[in-house]
View 1 (cartoon, one colour):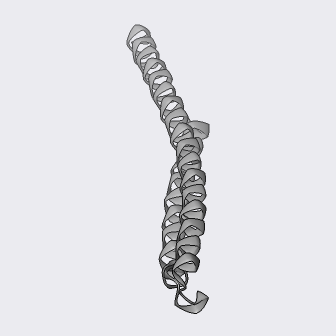
View 2 (cartoon, one colour):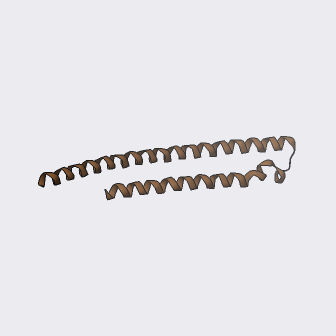
View 3 (cartoon, rainbow, N blue to C red):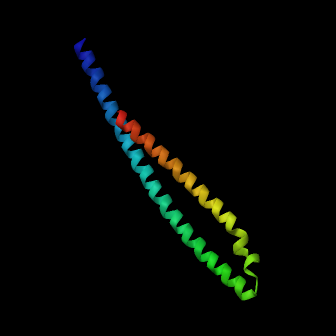
Length: 106
């Protein structure tokens, strides 16, 4: 009876250690993805600024009034893209918090 309980306890400890290791690995992966998402977001913002400046220069060179410029028309589109980026980042943050919670409970 005691040997059986000792084996079960040993198996439970091994399972717990393995699961904790998997949670740590998942946490590391999520942290890496969050960092990658942030890098991509910054790169996208930089490209958007460069693109915006190029469009403004092109419009100015062709004599288009500022209120009719292609840049003014597309500002709403760029704003909606950054909202999507923030939503994805928020989802990854929530997943990270869940992983931390599960790890702390283990």
